[in-house]
Image (tube, rainbow, N blue to C red; front, side):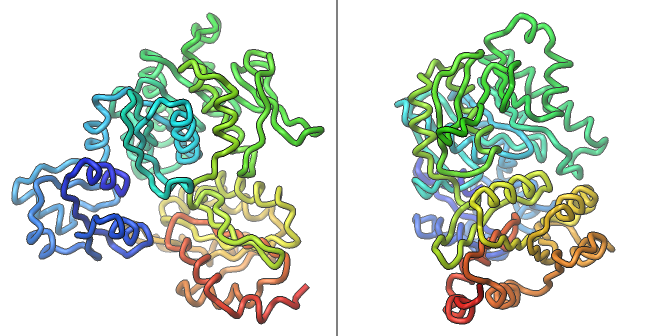
Length: 456
C-alpha cells in the first residue's frame, strides 16, 4: 500500500490514508510530504477528506468503518491488487511470485535492470537500502512487481515474465480447499507466463520442481527457451551455482558452461537462489551476465531482510522479516555463516492462523536449534486470537531449556534482552509484526554496553 501511495504521489495525485497503528513507514511517508495520514482508522477523518478513490488491502475487514462509508457513498473502491493491475497495464510486467524470497528477488532485479539502463518501474514489498524507498518510477518498458500469492492477487495483470521462487503452505485462510488450491494457482500463473515471454522457476524447491516437471514435460523435453530453471549444484537446470571454496565465490553456470562468479554482500544460500532468478531474467532479456554480476555484488539489500542494524566487536543486531518456518530456518542458517560467538534469537510469531496451520513446522524448526531462543506473544495483524494457539503453548511443547517464552510489551522485552546480551553476541530479531521496533529500542539503551561489556 505504501509503495502505491508513493507511486501516485510521484504522479501528482493527492494521497491520504490510515492504518491501525503508527509505524516507521508512516513517518517516512509523512516526511515525503504525504501528510494526510491518520491512526487509527476514523470515520470522521475519511468524511472530512472525502476521497474520490478508496484503496484497501486484504488485511482490511469488511466491517471497517472507512470501507463501509466508501460503499455507502458510492466511491470508487479498488483492492490494492486491482489498482496495481491498472498501474502496470501500459508496461511489460515482470512478476516475482513465491512463498518466500519475493521482496529480495524483486529488489535485486530492479537494481539490475536499472544498472542495465532499462529504467524499470517497480513496486516492491520492502524498502531498498540504496534508495530508501519501495517504489521506482522509470521511463522504461518494464515494470517489476512483487506478485502476492497470499490472496491470489498474483493472478491479476498480464505477466510478461514470471518468476516462481518456491511454493509452500501459507495463507491457508484464503485457500479453502488447502494446499492443492495453492499449487493450482501457481500453475495458472506459470501457464500465463509461458504464454508470453517466459517463466523462471527454482527447481531447488521440491514442490515447484514437481509442479513444473509434471505439467510442462513438452517444454522441458524441447529445451524451451521460454522456460528457465535454476538451482544450486544442479546438472539439470538452465542455470546453476556452485560454491568455490578456493575463492569463496559462487561460480555461475549457464547450460553447463561457467559464465561468471559472484560474491554477494548479503549471506545465505537462499540469497544465491534469489540471485539466480535474476540471472534467469537476464537470459530472457538478453542482458550480459557480467553486468548482472556487478549489479548483484553492489546490491545492498532491503530493510528487514537480514538488515544489520549494528555491527561491532561488542555485538551485532540483525532485523529480519522471517515469519514462516522455512524463512526462519534460512535466516538462522545465514546468521550462523557470520560465525558469531553466541547467537541469540527473538522470534515473534505472526498471525494465529499461520501458527495454527504450521504448528508442527514451527516446533521442528525451533527444536533443532541449540542457541538461545526467546518466543514473544503472537502478533495479531487481523482477525482474532485462537484458543490454545499461542507462544506459551508452543514453547511448552518444544520443551527445551534454550527455548523460552518471553511475554510482555516491547519495552519489557527490550529490558529483558538488554540484560542478557554478552560481548560477541549476534542478536537476531525475526517477525513480520511490531518486533521490528525492538532493535531500535535496544540500540537506544545506554545500559547494553555499560552492564554487559564485561560478560564473556
